[in-house]
Amino acid sequence: MTHTLRTDLGGVPPHRRGGSLLSLFVLSDVQVMDTLSPARCEWVELLAEEPKWQPLLHMHRPYETLTHWALAAHVERVRRQPVAPWSGRPYDLALSLGDNIDNAQANELDAFLVIVAGGHTQLSAWGGVHDASQANDASPWPYWCPDAAVDDLWKRQGYPAIPDFLARASAEVVSHGLGFAWASVPGNHDLMRQGTALPEPGIERIAVGNRKLLLRPDGFDPADPLTLFVDEPAAFSRGGTRLITALASRRAVSKQEWIAAHVAHGAAGCNDHHATLGRTDTVIDTEHARIVLLDTNHPAGDYQGSIGAEQLEWLEQQLAEVDRQPGRICVLASHHGSVSLTNTRGNAPQRHHAQALTALLHRHPSLVAWLVGHRHLHEIKPHAGPQGGFWEISTGSLIDWPSQTRAVEFMRHGDGQVEIVCTLQDHGALPGSMAHWHHTLARRFAGAHIDRMQGMPGDGDVRLLHERKMPA
Image 1 (cartoon, rainbow, N blue to C red):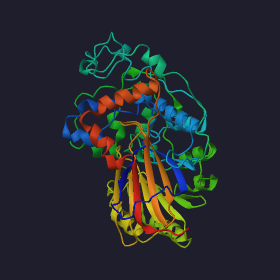
Image 2: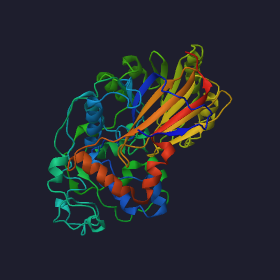
Image 3: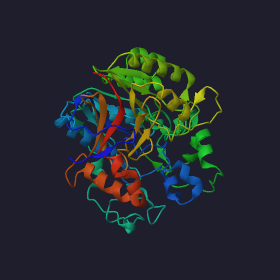
């Protein structure tokens, strides 16, 4: 096992492996989705080359109906081997960094939680974009259709035909669950329609109905698609002509319901009191570490994040408590990171951004790492500071390439030096399986962005040193 050694924050390469403090199984941006939902507007992806539509991407991926299969494959792999690869320490916690689901829907949330905690679930692909049986109004079909007999624009570009795809993708998924403690923070897709718009009556009526729109409405050409989607998401989904089975479970979930569902499925760090308050900020304490979970969703909508003034005060208290406990470390986890805490929609003075958060983190020597998602890429950034600084560790998405999880292990050496060991992990699903097809198609769809999403060698399998010393 070869890991790149990084000493951006100082530190001396140790001669032997240190003692294990904490091991985390990290995943992010799974985006389990109901691809039949009338509240989705896949047709926006067909305009991807036009700059004004790009802030709304991605609204469609050719493999997105397989995302829950990829999650199930990762869960099955780690259940079979629930130990961190560097130290051999059993995982203390599986941690999802948000965007567990795609469109803030109750049926998507149920599917994610069943796979993580154990049970049976099913999300149909019949009637969605891959099903061209109602495609009389479009030839060639503008989406990828796995049926070899259907002429579509994607197979012309090399996408494969896959026999019995719709039936296999729509089959029941049986999961035995992770088998150890887990938790998650909410991302923008968990609580907003398409990760961008707050639920509102117009889009909710469409979501639970029986008509789906797959092609751009005639004459629909807003000057600022992103702003219109935040303000009026229903405008993008009206006028559907494809008939599907209506489901009440396509309703949007509230934050209280999101928390309550996690509590019901055994998530760590939250309880009924959190659900009543609608509070997702919480802590999980282990023998050697405190993990702080922070909700960075912006209350006025849009996909970038921000932090409230009260949240910063609460976070300061949690870190200060750990500072007073010699030998303990603190790890922060949030969906948005320093690059994406930029949301100013609504001009709310009580909302703060990356600079305020990083300034706070620099005041607390116990804070050694900040785990983030959202950007769908692997990246590790050092934040040097007067207390020694901390590492910001961004893990790529499960929905997109490279569809990997990350083991994050915290070690302490005899001199008190802290080392963080990160190891990327594939699910290793068998060729021909739905999870394997998800991985194959995600690689093709990544195209020219594949290297950026995968990250540099120092963003993947890596050992991160700290100059500071943490006494035992």
